Structures are given as C-alpha cells and as structure tokens.
Length: 74
Image (tube, rainbow, N blue to C red; front, side, top):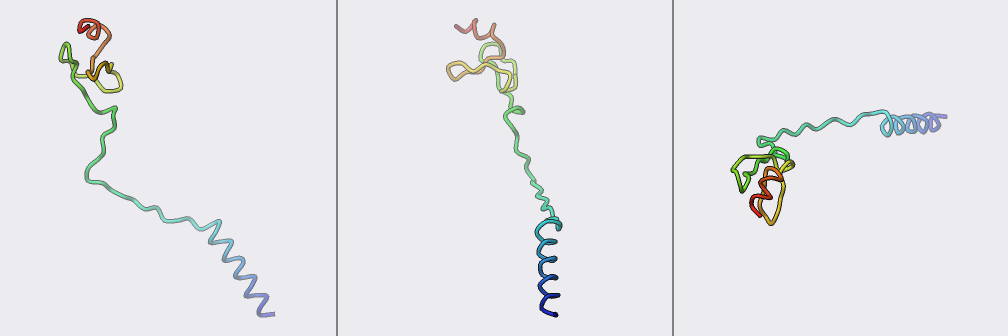
C-alpha cells in the first residue's frame, strides 16, 4: 500500500516538473550593444552624403546614396 502511494507521488511530481514548472529566465546584460547593419551608415562615393547600408546601392565595392549618383560615376 505504501509502495503504491510513493509511486503515485513520484508520477505526480514527475508530471509537475516536466509540464508545469517554469524555468527561471536568465537575463544577460551586455555592456556593449551590437549594432545591426540597419544602424550602420556609409558615405556616398559621388556626393558624400551618408546613408544607411540597407538604403544605399552597392556597385563595384562602392556605396551610392541614389541611382543618380551611381549614373554620374559611370
């Protein structure tokens, strides 16, 4: 009888720990925040205007702010 109670208790404890107990969140704070490519600014080869990498045009290893500057260079 006692063995049955211990087994039932162990099964209930196992179910609780597997499904219901939440894991503690680990918060990691970094002193230096990593910049993404969207935050990086590059200078236009033709006019010198700074534009985001995502919005600029890359041609032959050089960045251009717009299509007009790209055509002026060629």
